[in-house]
Length: 104
Image (cartoon, rainbow, N blue to C red; front, side, top):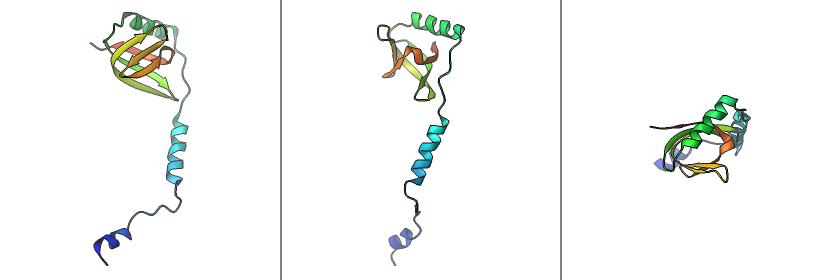
């Protein structure tokens, strides 16, 4: 028996094809959370930061998307008319912001 054939006999065997993927997807769904409600002070702080952002400012933000809070840092572009802030080509609705601050 050549080396390749010998190695194949010890290759991992998945008796229940797709089970590992199904378990991983279930775990991802289980970890999701609901969006929290901002306090009045946090909402004011976000509003103050947004009012002082100029195009090209570097910001650090935490936002809610698809059941998770995500962190991002990069150049900001604010679109007030549509209620969106764009950071690193991610368009984030302003109502989904949890925290935001300018990076010096």
